[in-house]
Length: 278
Image 1 (tube, rainbow, N blue to C red):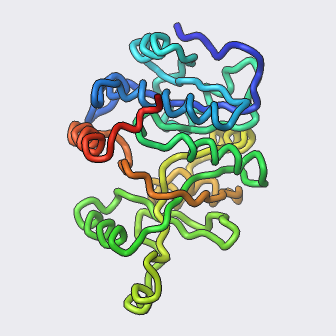
Image 2: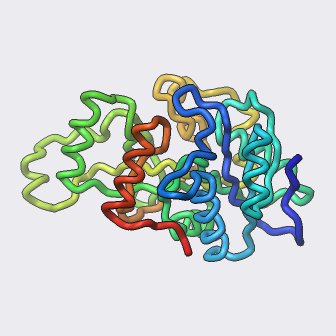
């Protein structure tokens, strides 16, 4: 059994959803990257972010006793959730609603994202605390070489990498697996500035609890189903999603889904150093 988060109630919660089942990489939360398990790395990020944000707890949400045992060995609270939940967002909601005192805000820090800088996670909480957004998520501006690489990558993997259109105040207008917006007079844009007008999404979310309740109860949206992007459910439902501009992380991986991704993660550590929070 997993123990729930203890101690006095806190207004915010970072949930690390960690499933054992994976068709391409079974048991991936328990697999090592440069001597530390994937779950250990993500939990360390969550703890560092909670310390930066203050008044925040950390919780692992899992459907497997082996992961629960590992969480206990790491000294982190966890919640057992149903194995048939279809997304990390729904799993984070189920874990948050198990708490004796439900949090005001929830960060969904996916258990296969070992290189997210803790400051980015903490800044999402600050955005939700200080503004009127229902959801907050990070984005980063693509310079022209990165945009060229993304275009080339999509020739082989068209549904890898998500871009975003945002209003001047940071409100998300749309997300897509296509590269948006289309760029008329691109040569002039390239000559004018080192950054393109394209923003890429970093797959990390913070929610108010009412927004997370709404998402868990709402059916998938039409465009959500077409694009395979759950954040579109919020936009289709009229909720406000704020984007938070961040610097491009040195260790930029969309997730760990295959043995090749594990190898790429270790290569990134060799090249850029190990970001594991001390």
